[in-house]
Image 1 (cartoon, one colour):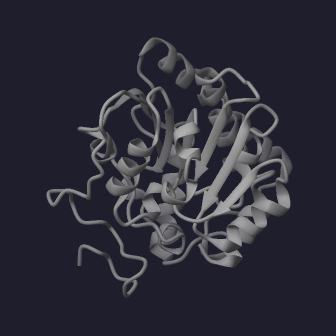
Image 2: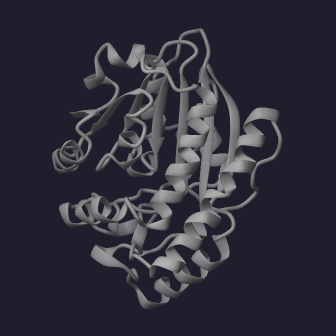
Length: 282
């Protein structure tokens, strides 16, 4: 993301329903996996402006890492209790990677050309027993200018998402769509924006802050999905079959984790944000 988009994120993520609702869901899952303890380390890979990892600093040791110096600078100014590293994971984490109890990678993998290599590298660096909490944008039909302005390579269907950890020593404890209750309204907005050819919010994004009553209602509706996700995590039950996003909880198992590149049989990405602003499959 560019600096303007990072500033929009930093300004909105304390209040906007999407950020707040997602943060409540993530926190509920993290606390279920790791009951709060000051000696447990949580690392946020691709932490952006720090909203997710900063919100966990009251209960855990927290580290955020991001390749963007602008994102890290904004995060450091907002969340002094969290350590932020400007660099690439896992290499620039050093020994911290093996010490982590849980890795977050929330809406990060879609920004990476070789998402297979990134995830397998993280699994290889993690110790057995560590957890991974991953989220990605779902439903390729929702592709819009919002994705392109955020430098996304792809949106995921469930098969493409699950392919990321096939063959790795990582057991999926939960795989589910989420942001389900608002899927259809968001779908309508994205289709309208596709027809118009541009996003509806600030800085080329779909982010804008609704009036307080609407924002509060959307936050509550979104965050309520956490109950079903927790039940699915606890009991191995079904999560949600459709939604704007996908979520997975993985547990690192003993054994060697090969670092691997994206298989050649994987479908081309929807877009290459670092090429000529044309679809990658063209």
